[in-house]
Amino acid sequence: MGENSERCPQCGASVSETAKFCNECGARLKILVPSFPAVQPEPSVVPAPPSYVRRFGVVQRILGMFFMPSQAMRDVGLRPEYGGVFIVLALQIALLIASISIVMSKFQVTGTYATQVMGILNGILGVAVIIGILLVFLRWLVKSAIVWKVCDGGSSWSFRSAASVTGYAYIAEIVTGLISVAFTALYFPVLHLDVSNLEIAHQTLQTYQSQAMTLTVYQLPVTFLTLVWKSYLGGVGTHYGTEKMFSKAAGISVFFVLSLIGVLVNFISIFT
Image 1 (spheres, rainbow, N blue to C red):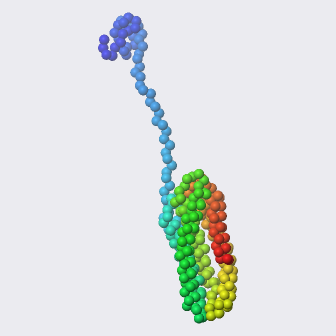
Image 2 (image 1 turned 45 degrees about the horizontal axis):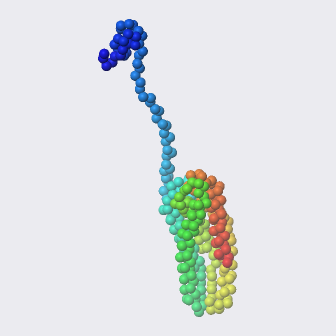
Image 3 (image 1 turned 90 degrees about the vertical axis):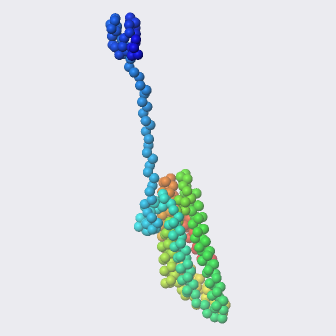
């Protein structure tokens, strides 16, 4: 019996395994169908969503805050970086120095101790510049940390994202700073201080302080508009930085409250 044969169940004769009938007795035979392993369907693979590709460079991001703030802050929130932030902070410091220099140029001190008084004033303003520079960076870091924790929304976003969004939102303050510098140069009064008579000099300083406070109040509308603009930028950036897990409205509210606290602290320091 060959390899490809079997016996007839009826008569026992050797028959081919593919034969339908026995050659000897004519009995009907069962045809063996070869079995093959079942083919398992391949599991369906869901393609991962494409990663976000940065659209704007640093300069485009900064300019975008004026012309297309939503797109620019979305780009910042999804692809954070510190380069543009440091440019914004550097501009703030430059405006701070320019403002102090303009105020200093309006001081005209005369009298017996004019040289000594000007030396003291220059020293005070120098210290004020150093403190102001440190406060610019400190305020950014503290506010970024608060935004990072408060606006997380379960997204576990990074401090880098929060710091980038917060830093770029300060672009609104650059506009305020430019307006403040121009306003100071044009309208801030000149201080004529005669230090020969200390009592008169003290009265002159009090009058000058009152004038300065009045001019500061005139800038309140611009300050409020800047606060709203900065809050909007921060809210949009936070929304996208947290992958939309923190709403725009909530982000705007957080930035508005933090900015309002900063404005109040500034005014308290000026009026006290």
